[in-house]
Amino acid sequence: MLHIILGDYKGKNYIFDPNTYFDNAYEDEWLTDPLSKEIVRNIDRSELVGPNLVQSPVLGAIPPSRLSGGVKTLILIGNDPEHIFNASACGENCAPWLLKLGAMKDITVRLGYLMHLGNDPFEVDIVNTGKVVRNQTEFVREVIMQDLLEAEYP
Image (cartoon, rainbow, N blue to C red):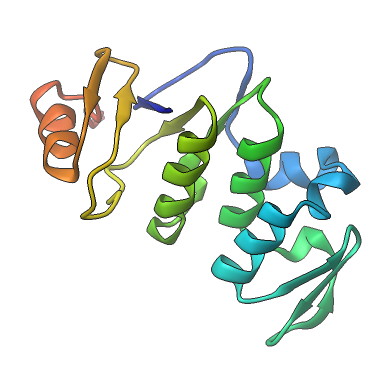
């Protein structure tokens, strides 16, 4: 199941900047995995040729460090269960992948914005409140009613 922490999170296992973390921590086998290849193809419209080569239709041959932040975050979430990643590094085009990864295994991410998770039914655990929401309306309602993304003003 996908578990989402909304708002601030300061756990020792939390990675605020998954983009930089990925560049320094990814393992070659993560980039030869069929799921990673599918994520890269879908989100970045590129082909993961091998652990050190991505073929982009726009940029040409690039290293994995040039993948988008969203792709890097999704690959980390799928391969590094020891950490909680800042899924705010992901755009809403990554939402279906977050749900898919959560359907495959338990994952926990942190979100700092109200991501649109789609119009289809889903199950997401809001860690802050312990409530499982089953669609976008319930998700939005829980976030707003519980004030989980409270803005701080100077």
